[in-house]
Image 1 (cartoon, rainbow, N blue to C red):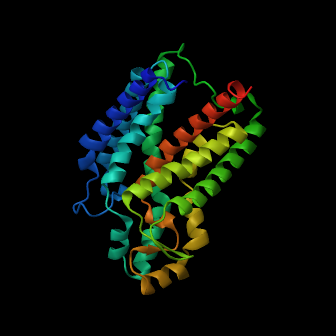
Image 2 (image 1 turned 90 degrees about the horizontal axis):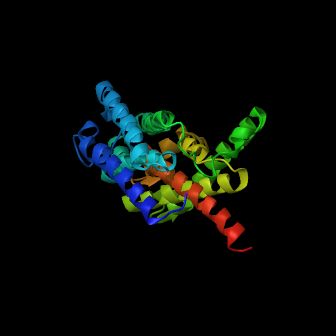
Image 3 (image 1 turned 180 degrees about the vertical axis):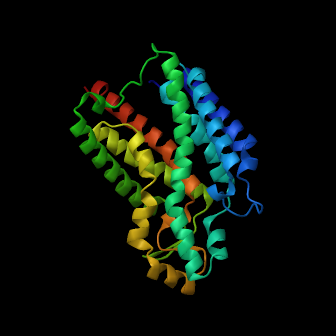
Amino acid sequence: MELTWVNKLRITAVAAVGIVVIGILAWPLVAPADLLLPVRASNINLSGTLLLLALAFGIGFVGYFISWPHGREIGILGVPFGLTIWAGRSGLMRTLTQAHHETADRVSLVDSLRVEPVYWLLIVAAGFAGVLLAQRLRPGAKLPAGGDSDKSRESENLYVNGAIALAASVLISQFFLGVFGQNLVMSHNVAAQPATGQIIFAVTAAFGVAAFVVKRFLDLSYLWPALASLFVVPLAQAMHYRTTTIQQFAETCPATFFPHSIFAILPVQLVALGTLGSVIGYWMAVRYDYWKKHETG
């Protein structure tokens, strides 16, 4: 898929649908009572969750036809763009750590951060399901250029390469989140709460690097780095934020400090921006391969 001005318009149109429907109209579903508080999945009740899933599915479905004949590549962007608006409007993580100043409360908070990305990734997956259904209604629709070459391989290779891609994505994204997602650093093992703009850049860039590497060296799609957003926090918690460390930070450090920048990033920010970054990195790798083949001889 070439990034022509027509395709730029298609991307803009799909992004606008997601921003308006989820980012603006559905904001009351998740808006905290205190706007300084972060956006959390726990703010949404069951009926709100079902409505959000339906909206995400509809955005993916409509986005496919808006961006046809590149609906498979572009239609999936609508939901992440909508969630990115929530990620930008959300309060910061330090507000939660200020409210959870006791060690037991802080442990419970960190544990909830470990599982919450599953919720947001399900919302993104609902949008992708809408795209797939729309594609089935148009059996002659063109599949994405440069798509997963693993589809033609044996299942054993698929599992092995998928596992490698997932592990590499988790490690690469975690490393670059620590590099990019920094405010003032007080010492080598204490990171301050970054601003929202810094978080947006850090997550998008970190997952973009991971997706570029996965596509470039394993020829797999952006789905693997996006899926890695489920495992970044558990790995970081195991490495940097065990119970003893949580107790130490709760008792000795202000709420704005964390043992790693990952813990200053909200799950909705991690998944929404991680998905967008994964798609961007994938197509940058496709473009790089094209340039290397045709422009350099």
